[in-house]
Image (tube, rainbow, N blue to C red; front, side, top):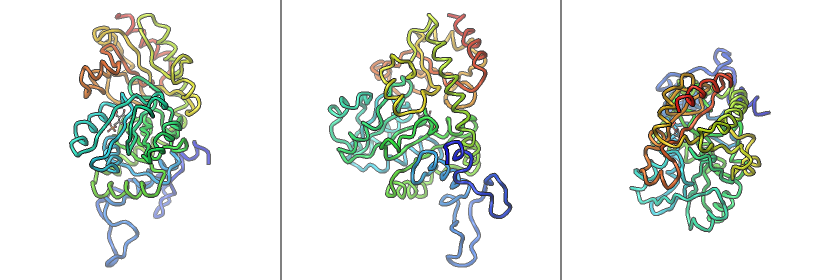
Length: 378
Ligand SMILES: Cc1ncc(COP(=O)(O)O)c(C=O)c1O
């Protein structure tokens, strides 16, 4: 089936008891058994839930994995995947990942005897030379918030040489634009909170596996550690993915327009977006993804300028998160990347004037008019 068809149908059958076309929200904690060991594959709702399972099958199909497991948030999915790593092992991480990922790795998991090395992975050959040995490689591409592009296929080869697992956080692209498993990644992670849900009304996460052994472990951790996605949230994401192909087409069109619009404004020092032909990762992005997405960062030079600009916006809402149908705008240094220290942010180039926009699906002329209100304050 084609991608848009899978968005709408994969993992879902009419409800067997009523014929309901939409998978019901199975809001139950347990299932009645007919005798000892006599059940229909459902025992307890932390372990199995039909709504969650429908979503997991849908997401496995969209990413081309053999199975998927949903968790209570993107961070819970990340945490579950990191249980594949044992004490004494080493994890290589592309630099400038989401601040919460950096915080989980450095402030919690590092306490359990796992070493984390943050390395620029935008040049796969240089990364190969610099990285040393590792058992797991964690990348985002494009990275948050500086939109550096990592070559997934080349890094899969680098990881394979070391017998290491390659995990790609595909939150920024969604499977509509990029499918890392087909490029050699072993596991894909999403914050389903973002483009997959798409309507800013649910927090969740998923890990999609390419190999049976990883899938089994992720299922075991989902049940054993218990950070499951609720039936209500599963239903919301399942509804969201039905329109993923459609929404991403519009995000892509609006993203292109807004990136060019921002670059044309003299108050903007620099625009970070892989769709520009002079972006260092442009050719890789063209090769490995179907588009450039609607995540764009731009530098207004100082915190004061960013603040003046952001206060004047009405349609573009200032807030954490991204990937909703409505345009969201954020200030990475004080919001998503506040978990990094100032020297760490300085080293990465996440300046105080940096603003990140998640371009939504509104009429693009209205977005431009709103952004012009911001520019008028500079
Ligand atoms: C790229 C990326 N990965 C993971 C996460 C974490 O997801 P959640 O907020 O659902 O825990 C985020 C959140 O912003 C993100 O931007």
